[in-house]
Amino acid sequence: MTEQPMVRFDNVSKRYGALTVLDGLNLDIARGEKVSI
Image (cartoon, rainbow, N blue to C red; front, side):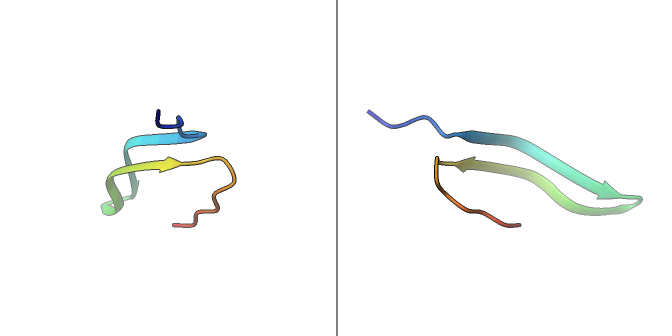
């Protein structure tokens, strides 16, 4: 059985005006994992 992620992001996008800096980000973060973007 696969453990469920502690945090899940699905299809995240971020824009600053006309500049798209993230487009369609999918990310699962497990308990105890450290992540930076």
